[in-house]
Image (cartoon, rainbow, N blue to C red; front, side, top):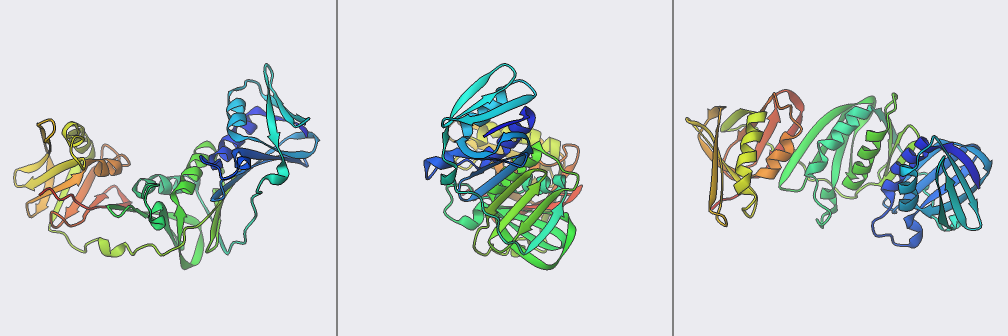
Length: 372
């Protein structure tokens, strides 16, 4: 195998494909990236069996062939070399990568051993703008359950498509976020799928490094989903199971509503965080009454108490309620600091709803913390 290609194209392709390299590979071959040189196209593949990524770039191919090279090693090297052009040659079970001023030799593995990514049959497809998909992913992933959670359905986002509206819902059972957007096509029937958070992180990372005026092409069935943007193809298995109905978690009416400036709220939280981070649950206490909004936190380990007072518009009954500070902070980082946030509540232990009057596409529900 011998070819010449753009260093920039190769670097960007490897950075995308390497996202599928497993941290703990089941077999040594999965440490590698598969290269195939055919008909002036260099194709690269990586997979951990749960997600697969393919990238294709143009190349001047002198000798066709296929090979597997350690993915982390070649990605790091190509990312650091200088020069516009890279020469790629395989001989005697070694791959030699040359640039203008440097070269490196890599051990190779047999291409026949690599589990090549198979094309699935998809039942539905649509296009969505890059920025819309990035926004949906970025503002929902934070609420997914962590990798140590034993419940698979909470380690992904529930995605609902109905006509030209797409809705992402994510929850770790302590908080829940709902965010909507529009697709470029129309799906006549309502469809619900659960996409792994790990795959969405990889897609988000790829979208940050590439752009296609046509948008992202999404294909899916009841078992798999695939996203194609420019020369990058990402596919993964969907999570089996039914996502719990979230509509019942949002009350129809509220006893207390508070509107506060985002920048003021973030500033106050940065103060009380000095004490809240010493508590077991990162607890901050909100007191809403006729005198205004008091935010506080107390640490029994350091005997520190921090209290801040904020200007706020308060409607309804007085209320004392406690939240995990980090949960509220996670949501406010998506808000315009010059805007306001509305908190709608009923009882000290009932879910509270956070909304942004300037952005009606997103709703955030947080379970309060019991303080006694």
